[in-house]
Length: 125
Length: 106
Image 1 (spheres, chains in turn orange, yellow):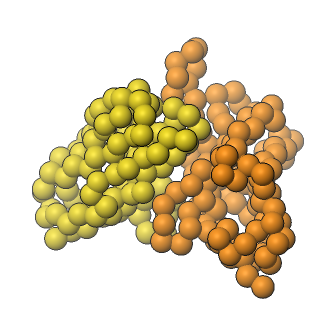
Image 2 (cartoon, rainbow over the protein chains, first blue to last red; image 1 turned 60 degrees about the vertical axis):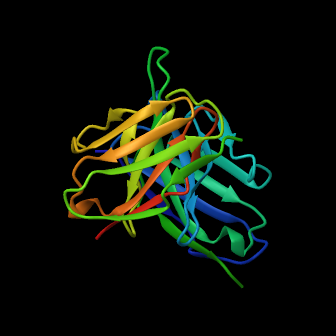
């Protein structure tokens, strides 16, 4: 059974960099056929996709956050990470990591089939 | 950017009722649409992928249909455990979620 677990500080000061790690267990992050995403949810609001990474290091980012986001992968630790720079109170949210299942043999499909439990990050001085 | 809208934003129905939620994309996304259920304090869970495919282990009272720009999600017989917020999500270009529909028991 695949499990994802977010970890990192729950409190970040304004203008600093938010850093989170997602540890994957029960499966290898280097397995083909999956992208690994970060998704956030502002308190009481909807879901916002932040970006994703393939085990090779290829990344895609939400254009609205692209200038501040870096996602990286460490296959030796079976982890991927999120860095969001120059945070403000508007970045206060629950941050989720999730596995994005893709199709094989040219069949196009994609959905987030496994999620972490989420971690609340508050931006405040 | 592809924008997603959902209606209604909330609904209240009785146990056993048929419930339908609609989702509209701002441009043609073929069938590149998923539906998720989120219960309070929990991560979302995929119910329907590729507009109409039921995720393994999900009860058959959940179903989805549509293609292009207009999609629908149906619970054929609402159960107390279905109380949640439901989101559509497109993956035609990057990923965008709809604003959600909160489902309650009357």
